[in-house]
Length: 203
Image (cartoon, rainbow, N blue to C red; front, side, top):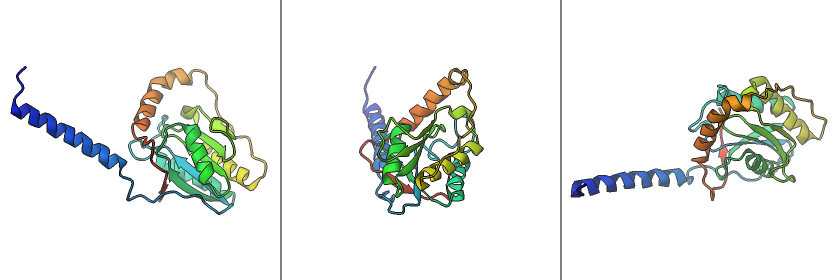
């Protein structure tokens, strides 16, 4: 294969374009940094990096815009205040939930991956422990997400939570395994390990 000046120029241009993409991905200077809240009524919801960025629906097709509104509505129904942040440094739902809890005024946070897996976390717990975990995202409904918001708010208030009815299907993992892996890969591609979390406005 002959290497011409034209080929070198084309390759150089492609490399420059890719570098610009990476630079734009790392630029969070225009986004508002998420800080620790002081309001004891606050429950923070931590979103995965790709949530409503490159992924817009859960693994079972629920619009993420509606999912986040249901969680927020559940929190508000309990008289508490939702705040939404985006966690950039991980795509692991346990660590997303931990980050949300640490930044929450009440110490209670919700972590949600773009495929829909959700966790309720408390700031003093280790990342891989939690208050409640909803791992079977394909079986979660909008009603479930609203109930998750309500339970997180009840933890923040220090009152008893209510059992959240969920379906259980042993075949669902095999059925959605490939799609789950692809969605997780897509989310992980947006992880920026050294980036702090940023504030999100949900309209």
